[in-house]
Length: 108
Image (cartoon, rainbow, N blue to C red; front, side, top):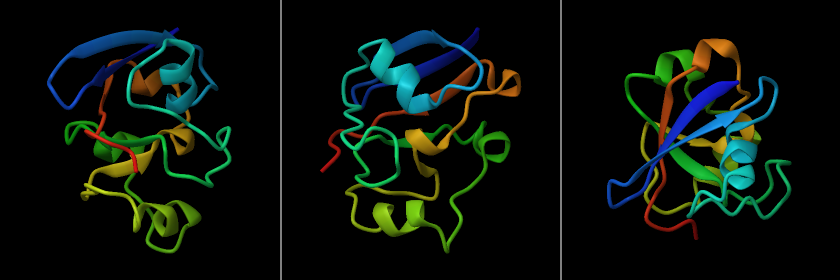
């Protein structure tokens, strides 16, 4: 199992465990992390699993590709930053054990 910590907009930390091969979206939903809705079922169609990757982890997770469907969706999300990603597009691998993701105040 891989540990992922979700940090709420108010600073509350919630560490969860997820199996390798799942996504950060599934880690949040399977563990009832507040603020991650994942309405589209994880097919990169809604941006309701927007997270900010902690700066210490962005190079391991990977930055948002400019010409991707993920980028197209995030351009309409509130509160995006250079660390924004969709949790459904972050596959969980052993190298991400300890990953920290920040949940925005709102998803819409």
